[in-house]
Length: 245
Image 1 (spheres, rainbow, N blue to C red):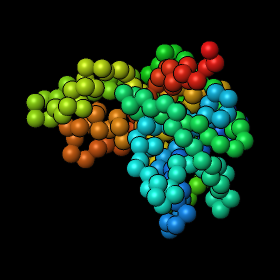
Image 2: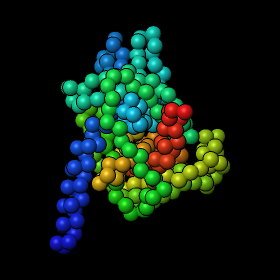
Image 3: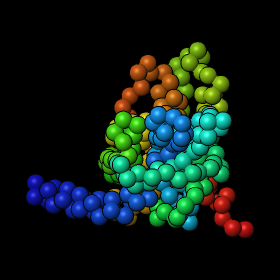
Image 4: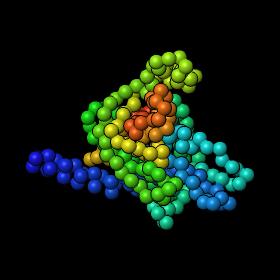
């Protein structure tokens, strides 16, 4: 019992220290429209990468139809609570196959998170993720959750009957890849949150609360509380597109 208590305390201390370094890199992702009430609308979470002028999030978070005639723009949100600020952003690269997006942001540089080698992730390992689970309701206050990688599993499993196969599911079955399944609950606002090592703060995956569920749990009437993450190796491929020649 004493050994277990000491391990839990050390783990908590590590996460406390890591959080202080990770949280400044976490941003909200959404839209801003000056004539709307409320003017800001949070769609999900993102995190700074590369040179600090780029942000990674889920593709479905930024695939919104902007009311350009009403001056609606894509933005990221920094800070928290009433002191939250927004900066304009634009989509540089969309990877719809892995539901990832790379944004370029205006303003000053943010502290970027480093990518870990997701090939080294093993089932049973514990990681953390930070984001804005119910941002539109709770406001811009980042929340952190922990969970173990309960399974490394294909994004789509063959269905029992042909009626459940949609064109999109067929495409994902053909171009399948493995994802991380976690024993933690994420909410829609968590989409785009980094899944990171609790000691180093390096990112091993990107939380996904919509895209994966629509594939993995298509045969379930009411989607489960299971959380999934897209491995960071696909983020690395995105970042290669912005490297200088």
